[in-house]
Length: 97
View 1: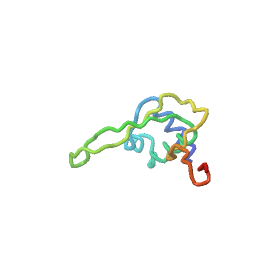
View 2: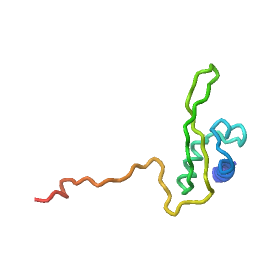
View 3: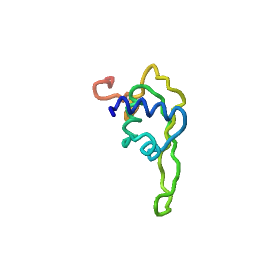
View 4: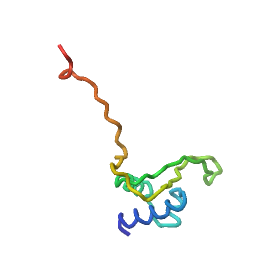
């Protein structure tokens, strides 16, 4: 399945109900859920990540993300994941004599 097809399938699924990466793998067959979430955000979709605590095989608590999409609408100006906000810091060229 292509990345675009996976993104469309994932967007439809998380628009109907929140899902973890393990649920996405088991139900949709998408192994790299975080990569597809990154792609969806890069294309302008609003995807929420909520940290939840689950038990692993040994019964110890561990944290995972639960993804959800409130709507399947795109933002007018897409948010670039992994980018920090730019703040201007005056440098030597900007310093007034």
